[in-house]
Image (cartoon, rainbow, N blue to C red; front, side, top):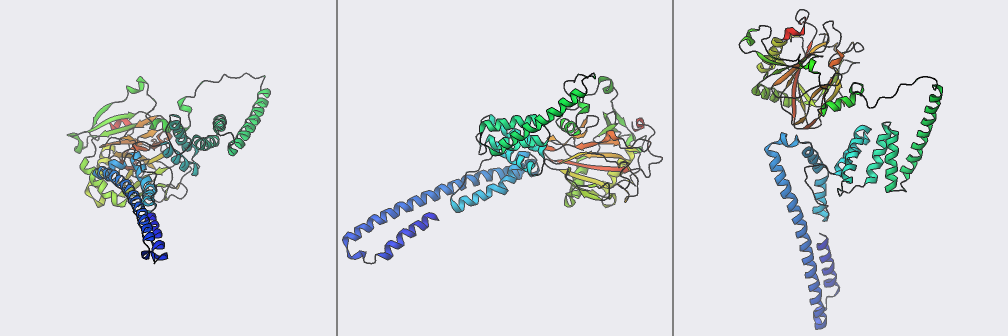
Length: 488
């Protein structure tokens, strides 16, 4: 378009300003040179357009290959976190860049890689920063810095990364590390105004804390002090750290003595006719709290029916508000869920009865079957299924008492992540399609078992489908086994 305007701009003034050119041979020869210049400009314009079209063609070919692959297995494709991130990035930014290329002949090009660049990590860190999530800001900025240190060529620089990183670390209370990072930033940019200000402030705070500690030390100089132990025992780590350790597969190993008490067995549902000839397969996952896994307990066909019923109804998952007793969304639960009643489909009804037959608990007072789908990054942070004493109205509207037990079906395998973890005890239960896990939330006395506090780890790669049944106290007065061994 620019070249076209240039051509018209050259041509029109020459033709309109000199209508008598044809009367002079000398002037006519000048027109030959003018025309030659126009032809040269036209060729330049064609070359520029061809270059632009070639870039667009290459971009289209890449997208064609990418979408061809993606449409073969859409869930599997977006189940990979990098693919999901790149898809969102393309739709939000790169298509705009293509528009600029078409209209203005401007573009930095489009790259499709199977890994996150330093710039990607930096952008994700900024998102966390704007939400005051300094913990994840630190993780993403450290990764960006690591890639830059390894020599990755990027549009961002170390100074920008260190600026965010040092402040995020400070916000989490690690003053020593914040000071170290600030000094590193100033080595790269000695005139950085904010960093110089932060350096003075951090040094002032540290000097103040040092004076306070010295004063406290002088006051206790006559008392015996206990030597500090190196390292921190896993049991005393903050819950967040234990949660993330377990999600990484760094679970607490049982002692051999405890492991010997875990068994696999066949279970006939306390001689239930349905399971005498084909007993259910049980495996002990953990001892305290007792977590039992049932293998091959839901078929692929049943899973597909449940998923098909749930998909049209999926909406942002909710939690019970302990103050109002009503359902509400929460930032610590990232998934979509739907509720299925037994009366609307025989498969759901059959699944409900299977749970009743195997646990011995009445499902008539249980909540409806909840189906949940977790995409990449989907998770549910540590929580209790039961209501604590300070939440007397949590399930008041249901009128069925507290949640006595939880039954959880795994309806898909997960390529990476997605474990159900119990930070209090260090247990990790990994998804396996067709299995289910069961545990009691309350002791026989009706008191809550705080060791059942659990979480759904973020899905890193893939797609996670689960369905759960929360069984309530009402109707279980004469049904709950006196000992857990009766589940065997």
